[in-house]
Image (cartoon, rainbow, N blue to C red; front, top):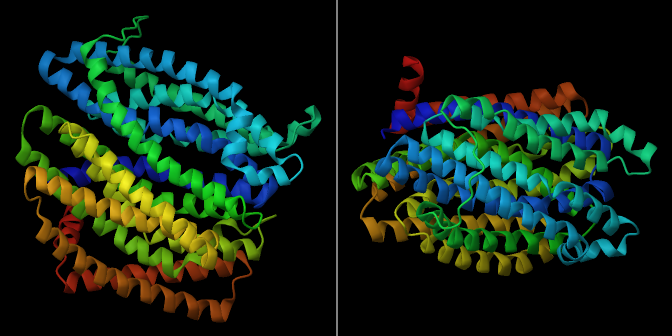
Length: 522
């Protein structure tokens, strides 16, 4: 797949993802304004992290990485009807297996919460509140796993927009819950934050239902057929197993971070979460969008034994990732504090929360390009039947990250935990790239490095321009009013965009010229 085709399909996903991410920011603003950064939000974030871990295993993570290549192989080998039957078998497989896991999760919720956030026991009522919300949100996993299987099927049919916009349903449901359900909870003797847990459950249902019309349009009809011995289902499980182990290793780092953050100053878990959510905007717009297209395309190339096409798709995808994420990295670092103030500093979210969240944001932003590039790299290994390689690399990078957590949290507190995660992601990408190159030959490494160096130079100049311009405007307007924050952030972004475009043009960044040419021809 050419870079233009990757960009075109990724653009469709980016448009849908942009809507979802904007709604995600509104959701976080609702959280910040109504609950601040303390007792209630800390409890919610830990409670939601547990189904999120399993979602990574059975939904957007391991299952998707294994399902799409298996589905492409079945369709290439036996035709569309075989792919439809496999999709039905996988959906039913998930319904049975994930429902059983959810039941265990509900019963074991008190133990899970105590293990994940032992520091909560020191605050009266915090552990109990977290356990209650964990039990409410655990069934979310059944809904979102099924939705992810539907998404994978539609992506193999090159239907990208509806699956990409589906996550917006979760954000819409949480926004609505903040205004409609949370205020009603005290009438039933519940904390208002519990309303957000019910909102998450409704959001998972929305993610599934919005895709049903597109699924039916592709000829799918649900049938009550379950098979744990079907060869394609077994093949998917064989790919899922190492993927699940690798994702579990990543989640160990998240658990360690939460464990350590829960022992720091109250609000640390919330500050990390607010910063991470902000970083998800560029990751979703660029990294996830490009990775989604790449997964479908490399799976198709692998099924056709077209290694040259796979390498071309992967190389063009990585160049596009760097073009879009490296400037975003430097701008996020330069404008971290005013961006956080603009988006979050309302209601119970004060100026001190802004400062602490900004520290975590720049630390996370340092790994933005690597986070996105890893998402693009991993599907190639699964499509080529090399699932154990990313698992091994994940264990290595996570082991180093956990060590860095302990090393950096002393001098940097919660920001040290974020920076350790970023460093681990950079290492993860470097090892994956080297391992894939050693298995299938060159994938344009020199050209990629030369292009990335030029993009990084232009991005550094853009970040410097953003920092200087924002500082000058803040010196005049301050950062207290909404208008002043808009002016500071807007001026910083405008300066960064102008400088990056100018510098990249002077440096002859080919990826930018191709992208601009594509936009002019659209």
